[in-house]
Length: 246
Ligand SMILES: Nc1ncnc2c1ncn2[C@@H]1O[C@H](COP(=O)(O)OP(=O)(O)OP(=O)(O)O)[C@@H](O)[C@H]1O
Image 1: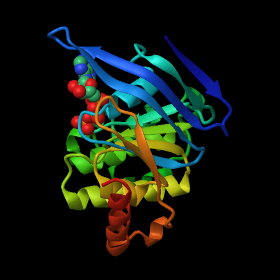
Image 2: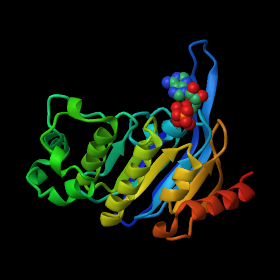
Image 3: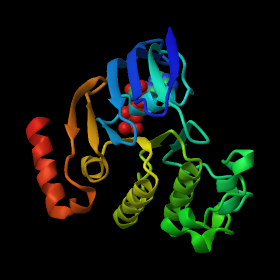
Image 4: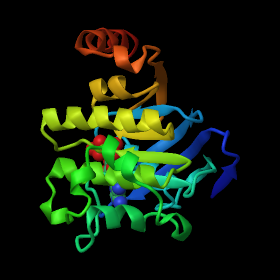
């Protein structure tokens, strides 16, 4: 049994998943999540950090309404022109539409003509608006996917390892672009990652998950201002983190 509630814009994203199981091809029951409970406050950037296969993507799929076979409940804040936006590892762009058309198609009809200059500018996409997805590098395609997600001004933004399989320089540039666009348009955000440094660079709070079946081991608050998180500061944050979560 599950239950989805919608709360006011100031309400947190609240997750209370009692259990989520899968049945394997060999008919074995696999418990992916058990007693998973956490909140993301309004306007906060949180990371879900956990080992490979612990149930992170499963959690996002439940929040996106793509998987309703679980016991428990969750509550999504409301607001924005769309309630929820998602950015996945693979930026699912329509190949026969330009970058700009891909972004505008995500908008509600009455917002289709909105001014997107500022958003394209922040993401360094101004010169790529009329390109087609096949003409974009992987990094540019991810930027287009971020533009599409932020353009809808969602009440919640879910990101599933959006920088995976990029070379480290491109990934780092994109992380910084994400922070610039997020700071310009603060949005309640939950990002899945298994990259500790990435989580400590981006997040206000890191929600640390156990191995499968996932539950919360603890919360690591990153109290340092984002501009101060340079290489040395990140090394210190990593060692603080390792002291708490060996
Ligand atoms: N449709 C499915 N059928 C059976 N088992 C599944 C299914 N989807 C996920 N699982 C299993 O549930 C567990 C959690 O999977 P999930 O993809 O949520 O993990 P994850 O934390 O996102 O992993 P990663 O970091 O490697 O992407 C894994 O053991 C996975 O094999």
